[in-house]
Length: 423
Ligand SMILES: [Zn+2]
Image 1 (cartoon, protein in one colour):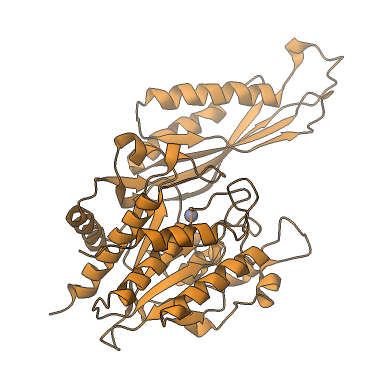
Image 2 (image 1 turned 90 degrees about the horizontal axis):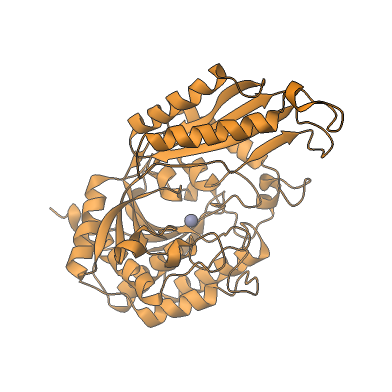
């Protein structure tokens, strides 16, 4: 069993926390920004110091590779993203990059023999903070391998047209064109050149901490469906129109949302999660009874039968009476549960057991780059705990010890994968 180095890991955590430091313990580091360039410069500096070869593809995904003993073997890749949400933390995404760097540094420092070339990757624009959607560039890489029904979402031309939320004149494609690390399409990750992928990530929830475990052996990304629920009423004057005669779309939606919570909770699935996080109201004037209200509902669970039960409840909404308003339910999008490659999950489990860290199987409620890559390569993930379950905020924290343990699991799992086809 090999171990990664806590001191070196701590140094990386402190260094990367400077790039986009928002001044209160976290970072704002959008993809393709000046801060992202600083983080990538640091990645290049550290990877060149151990003799890694740096490549960038046409999407500015970056790859640092050290050779193995077999020049014809496919690469095993590790990594994640280095962009953040606005006022995000110092671990989401970047831990997967630092963990991959730490693995390569440990292998070089200890001259650990391995057959396959090993690569650390930074995926461009995972958060989609300035240019939506999330996981854009891993999505483009995997485009041809995705199920047909959401392939369109990641069509190259469409992604290049993605508009900046900060500057309506700017598109992703335009900004990428002048970005320091835009490279060659030939350097893209493909199944011809790559064998498998591992992503180390913080859990971003409280499950590992509550269970007192150091490492999560991730088995899947939860199936997810997004619906929009819309109510159509009648606008009228807030001062002159009697309560009894109103068709108030907001009041209708409020009642329907409470009804939904009651019905869904009665299903009794403890690990089912669902969220209304976005609403649209029209005309949104304090003297006018609203004639339109639209809310999102995002539902996640591993088992498609459970998602179907929720779907049936949602489909009852238009048949019911909601304050005299018409109700429509529309499917935004859905995706099935993505299960990680069983062999790779096995390597992670063996590695964590041999290292003697406490662990449990866990699923991911959040989306990750690995999820799209899994359409083209065998893929898996490793989680380490998030203090108080907090993420996508400045107090996001994981101890140096836990980050290093995650990297050690990554290292040993990758070495198991490396040795696997040694006949
Ligand atoms: Zn992330």
